[in-house]
Image (cartoon, rainbow, N blue to C red; front, top):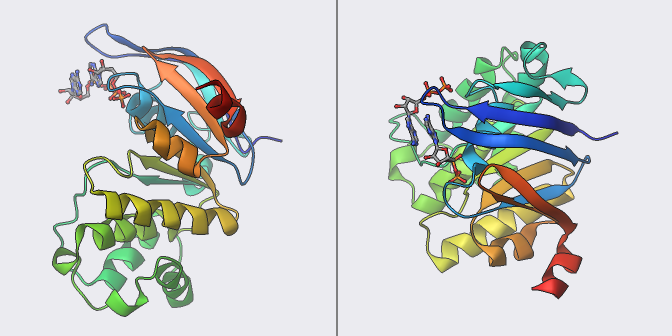
Length: 224
Ligand code: ADP
Ligand code: ADP
């Protein structure tokens, strides 16, 4: 069964703009799906709708069978979201920042879980640094650690490499590849075709609020 199932999802913003015009998509456990599309296509709207940040106008999204609108409490525990902006101007130490995120999900304190995720993201050596002292790449890793520490089944990455240099982009690709090997299901948005090619198993091309095609990466690349 798919871990994430989106059916005829529509989003009309309060100003009347139709940002999503009936999106349907199934994502299998362990899969890495890239949502590829130009700026304004509706990528952020789609993940915001599934992650409960923006209201769904109509249609459904379910995570492991939990409807994100009706069973929001159960659904949100299964979701991790790494937002686009690096908003990490924290004076807290990395370990506390990450542990706090776990608490936000109502999960009991678990130092071992925090250590595991910090090691997974090569942040263990930085555990006593404050997030503000870190490089951009390390900050992004902290954001991923915060999104993973409550052990979600599905991780959403919104433009993980927007505005970063080539080296940092490669670093992010490596992180995603490591998470893949741990079996995390990942949906990431990007407007770089090379990025979709480098890290995704499947690519969904989105434009003006509609999915134009969904294909295995290899068959898509053969056609490009
Ligand atoms: P993408 O992530 O693909 O760049 P977005 O989902 O951010 O696209 O935006 C899709 C479209 O919806 C854009 O035209 C954007 O201007 C519009 N939009 C986004 N948020 C709002 C909002 N809160 N109110 C009205 N329009 C919005
Ligand atoms: P919702 O339907 O999810 O409540 P709203 O239409 O109320 O969304 O807008 C949410 C926020 O997005 C508002 O603070 C608004 O100022 C902002 N916003 C409005 N237009 C845009 C746009 N074109 N792109 C991005 N954000 C926008």
